[in-house]
Image 1: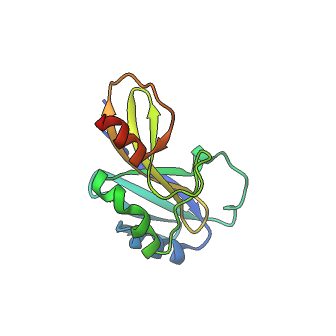
Image 2: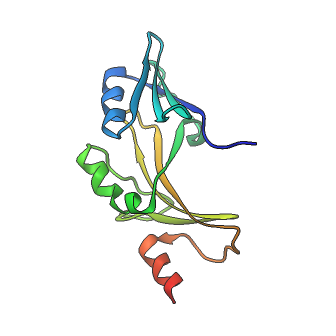
Length: 153
């Protein structure tokens, strides 16, 4: 039934700054309105709505202000440098410091590789790549290079 993400919404404190940030990530502006601006995540299939608000700093649970963008593995491997070129820093996640490359998440029933970063308002963003599905998960979270080494043995 569900085929993918259709829309997600985030609060932003400065619409112009946020438009610039998401354009640098390669998203196409779909609609610019008075209250909300939409970017295509995948044109005609999914989009991101940004709402300018003075309540961006209000405490929140991270899952309410988090978006994961699916990317190809080759792009994920280059994502840290790509993000830094656009003024975004990869953030530490799950106690891995400093993050030098994607982490592999042993989420049953699918294993993923991911990098995490923030937009200008501190919204949590993620680039994620599925690695394996329907496999027996029996490992701790690790960096991608360690995972690849363990899979080649």
